[in-house]
Amino acid sequence: MRRMLTMTLAAMLAATTMMRADDGAARWWAHVQALANDGMEGRNTGSPAHKRAAEYVAAQFKTSGLEPAGVGGYIQPVAFNTRTIDESKSSLALVKNGKAEALTLGEDANINLRVDPAPSVEAPLVFIGYGLSIPERNINDFAGVNLTGAVVVHIAATPKSLPGPLQAHFGSADERWKMYKAAGAVGTVSIANPKSMDVPWARATLARLQPSMSLADPTLDEAPGQRLSVTMNPAHADKLFAGTGHTFAELLALVDAGKPVPSFALPARLKATTAVERARVESQNVAGVLRGSDPKRRDDYVVLSAHLDHLGIGGAVNGDTIYNGAMDNASGVAAILEVAAALRESGAKPARSILFLAVTGEEKGLQGSRYFAAHPTVPRSTIAANVNTDMFLPLFPLKTLMVLGLDESDLGQDIRATAQAAGVGVQADPEPQRNRFVRSDQYSFIRFGIPALAMKVGYEPNSPQAAIAATWTAERYHAPSDDLNQPIDRSAAAKYVEIVKDLAVRIANRADRPRWNDSSFFKRFAGGATHH
Ligand SMILES: [Zn+2]
Image (tube, rainbow, N blue to C red):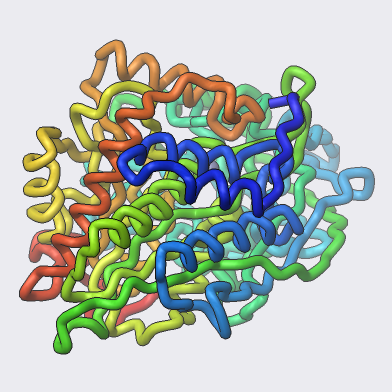
């Protein structure tokens, strides 16, 4: 949004405490306004504005009577290395028969700085279809090609034959890199899949000049040894396939049909030069605890999480440069703030403790939650469950709850019972190919074996609501128009908050700890296996 809306922290705190307790929707919206007004500058990880937002959350936690659960207060500092590309000194080219064909950065392809790139890379390109090697599923896209010293080229897609959670897990960048590294590759070119791109290339490419961030803790490096990561514009992908007898359209049609995709060496080598400006910044997670009442279970925690960061200030869209992130994810932080306030007012005394957690760095790749899960401020073994809220999208009445991870653990029973009591249906993710189960902060907990759920306002396929959600994603997701001037269904937000609150209390009062279902792929992470 363009109109400047300034309100001091003190005025905002006063406004929210004055509101009547039964006016949960208004108070939820007041938190969204406090976090997503233009003065919050899009809450970019590591920015002064993000710090102000974190202080607002800490003050609200205090008002709701939560114990500080950060480091020496509510805040847990998180250190990041930042990398910004200098495109004037960077280049990509395809080299064939000694002739170099330049790829235009921003148009043909982008160098992704989530991976710390080597100053220069020149390597053969090998196309490997979906780019997966999963022996337990008899998938081997590496058969018949030599990846040693190569940059692998893959379509950002997973075979439809894989169950949704496995698509999500194995399709993630860091799981892919483990496979490629084991096969001797030095880098990756990921061709965006036009069918599952949430953000069209023209908008996604605006973000390429923003600093990219990774955790400064070297033990949490997600791509050890990776020297190059490139994202290819699907509309220009045929530059890679020239001379192979294949076209991108033909290969993409195989993906769309769920068919096997061939692997083959490409005729060109890739030459990359990358100039990077590096710096270090600090950002903030915010944690507070509602202490449990049962002497035996009060040192166990149910973590309610939501990411606080968004994209900051970036490329102008319709003259607006502030990426307010009202739905992504001021709305989710506002939800857990409202849950904390409502629990205090109700005098609820759940048996286990509830840890409220606003994390940073989600937009940089789930970084703040990874840091918390790796360095939790309570013993990790005492974290019984995670319930995450990211962009739950109250755009229309809440009749169905979309639950990510519904069939993975017995938390599924808790959410089914909670939703039923609220008169709301539940559904698993209707679009597993969008990888939502591993695309937000719950995944940082899952990788440490902690059962988790994430929820959104759901809709039936091909319904008017599905069209509203699709339009929102196309027009507002990761755009400056995800701001305070958009139509929101506040009753849906209030109902969602109520369900999160009731779910948290129900899990906190369980006699036993939540468990993964035996059939769940993610069960393997329980019992000590971790992210690396
Ligand atoms: Zn986002």
